[in-house]
Amino acid sequence: MFTNNKYDDIRVICLSMEKQKGTSVFMSLSNHSHKTAKEIFDTYANTEGVFVKTRIPLKNMFDSSPVSRSQAKRVCNRLDKFREVLVDFEEVSWMGQGFAHEIFAVFAKRHPEITITPVNMNEDVEKMYNHVRITEST
Image 1 (cartoon, rainbow, N blue to C red):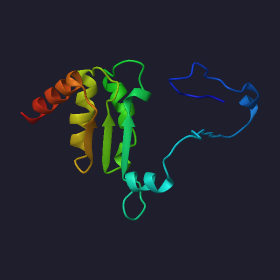
Image 2 (image 1 turned 90 degrees about the vertical axis):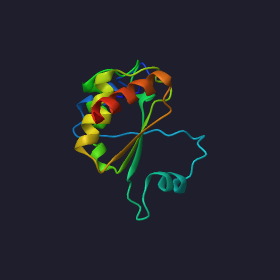
Image 3 (image 1 turned 30 degrees about the vertical axis):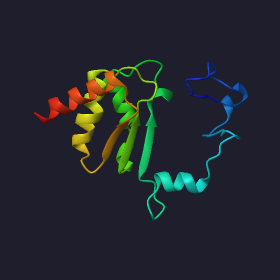
């Protein structure tokens, strides 16, 4: 079994499962969450119950500031399944121009039907976001 969580150092959890055929997915959730299923659906689903909105917490994805186009492409993978995307920059101190351009210019231009909204930007992140948006609009 393999885990990918930037907060854990352990990657291989159980070697005895290695010889099993097929795919297994395990998930653990906090027993201390105060969120209800209704709150989750109300936040991310439309009136028909279809998930149309997602939030990408970058702090859970990168050990340092995101800089490259390839990192941005991984972030954008499957975002075309949503209508609204919140890119959460909480605890991200800076982003590279290639990263910003790939998400907020290239991906946005390919998918004009999707609203991409950056949230929790600090001053340095916002400067790069504005730089990419201004450069793309001229």
